[in-house]
Image (cartoon, rainbow, N blue to C red; front, side, top):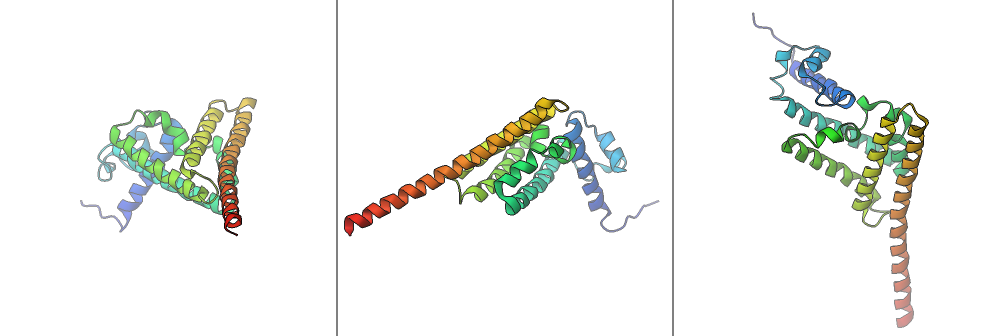
Length: 214
């Protein structure tokens, strides 16, 4: 007997698989997350996996794309509402530290991503560059060499969150969050300071030129 599904069923099933897999990967890791467990939690049979994805590696790449897209939206929202300080406060919060399944895919999966196939690592690098580019664009009006500042901020935020999670349930974890937040804000101010120094120098040169020709 042929089973007919309502229109949109396939898209809904794919979305559900991605949703469950993304949270599983971030909570338990890629290697420890089996397809059978993912499909069971999604409420689907194992056979329903292959009409959507050819392999687990493809599922990982698609999850990365979705997770980083969602993460980029959150980054943009935070930048619009509160600037860099809002990004730092949100990213290095206790709530983010304690909820890896819904949090940053970079912090949760970096060690495993380094061991993924080349195609997956290239996809990750492209998506990371896109996110860095968004932060760099937001900083460009304030910071000289905004891409370098954005890369430094990403490295500081992600490394801080990973260390804080590794020491969770200890007083050290909260201290790591606070220290990382302070370092990230200092880096942001340093970038703004360099930009302002260049502007002051340019104004000084302009004034001297006017005086010389006045």
